[in-house]
Image 1 (cartoon, rainbow, N blue to C red):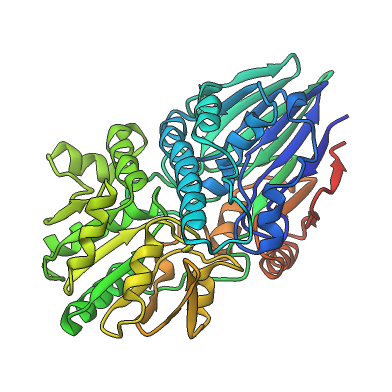
Image 2 (cartoon, rainbow, N blue to C red):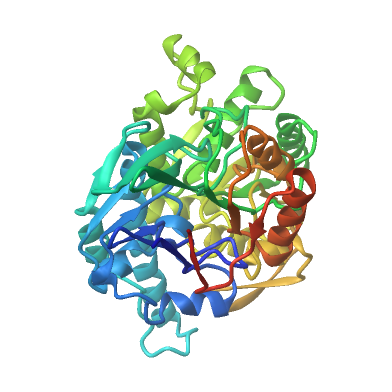
Length: 463
């Protein structure tokens, strides 16, 4: 019997965790942290639904914290199995997991110092030592290489085109002369994106676990380069500072790539571009190191000697002192800082200092989950609580959806159209309730395929 239990990413875009039990083994696909609404974040602190020591292996689709960030906690609670990931995902996690632990330790320390928490004392979810212990369990698996997870179960990674190293998890389960295929999409990327290859074409599967972040949304036909040029030029002319909350991995590198192109095309003025996130800086190095995962256009540029991720006046702020020094910049600069949903990290300090100034601009380039500060700002909140204080939102707020690394519903349907036959079932996850429901209806209407939107902790039998 094969059983699938949904331990996260149900009714939300965070906390991705799916438990696959088959051939006498337990495999956890992704191990993400819950973010956003308090009721979701509390799940990070609750007793895990399954004994971590009973899990044989964890299989990561990619490095984003909502897919990998709970690993140190699970190790802290007793997990000792293998963690499989692509080489690029492994490299990124070696940056992201310690950084996540460090940020939590620092946030707890700051909360205790400023006494704006009811917890006495505030504690991090996990410590740097837990992240280091988790990293000791990683085993890299390249795209396309098939390995045995058990006598009757194999694993193979396929390129998902979402961020560097992102993958579909392709699991085959033998039962006598029959074989059952279970495919986890992780986060499905978009075609024709800078740096990355297009998502791998899949021609069919028995069971598909499919993300639905943009299940009822389209990225539109607008030219995102043109949109970014407009926002940068407007900010420059108004004499303000442009602040871009950005995911450290993937989005930051794509923004740098695009700003470089706009400068080379003389569509924007050259100005200082600050990357204020140690994780984003280190992730940029990983992107440069793993050129084997780049698309053809990037490889051609690199052969010509072009540093595809370097703008004319690029400045990295690694230390806290370098970050604080950016506060002295009064106008005509770009600050790219994590986190992308304004849930923590150095971006909070920049917004604390600059959100109340109407000359400044805040540009959102990625999905903002329900319950995050980013979502509140986009929805027109007059004030945002940062470090215990309510900061007025006076800066100009902009949003460009074209930089999203998630496929929209048309791109998802186009990817599904390659299937030679209908899956037995498609489980729609990693989306807010309205987005998952909309994608389910679209798949049923377009293909007349079976779909299911699982609930938190729900189990199904794949037979």
